[in-house]
Image (cartoon, helix red, strand yellow):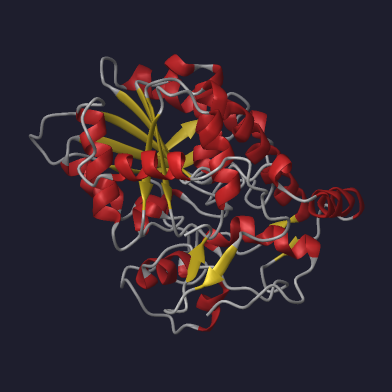
Length: 365
């Protein structure tokens, strides 16, 4: 399924950062999976919309608790790169049954936003997250507010939490995109800079890279992601450069995360290099809770073992001092104590070997 590093161009390797929503192996798959696909090209109407100060409107999906259920709070969920509000289809109903209203907007440049395919800039995206939180506080006064992120969405929330920690009552950071420039080889960062100067509008689709990356082990979820009309199938050089800017900012923000934060990573993450994740972990204050899933891929909340992550999130939100039901916090402590933080980050691709099952076994396991 996964080829080695031969013939990978330096710039093309940057696409591994956003392969979470591309998964080239799905391009040849038959169009099967969940029956509720929208017709080709059609984009479903949002449940709600959120206006921003500059006139931009962010469409959102909403999952509400069952009628009569006791409210646990409001959960704002931010998706990853090239993904959309549909990223939360699997975990959101679980959180809703636990009493949380889950509100998942399309971030600027993604989903069905008016500027789809255009990078808005990290400062604008962070400001949007703050504006969404402020609006939710106003709409639902007295309700607990939880900010949940995945990959790029987690990077946005890390930056927000570092600057304005009291924006939310809790931050749930899953698989944060923290592959910053300091964790990249000079050849990669230089090539990306040069391409952005010469051809920022050059659109890349992932076919330029002879590499398949598994974002999660749930094949049906990946097929659903690929065929979702809200998924963005390609990114310009300017978008990739902007993503690296954001990831670098998130890496720096790790040192300032507030204590009402839990950070969750998977051992089989093939998108964010383990050395980059380790660098972020090493900067985080000891008051930040950490969870490490031995069978977890990048899209933890779409993995086949996602119930472990869902249960841990709900348990931590109910009592942040208790042990996580899955034992992922114990795994995290073992991983931190057993591995040096000064390991060199891979220059081009996430460091990995092929195990006997044909899966990428992430270093150093």
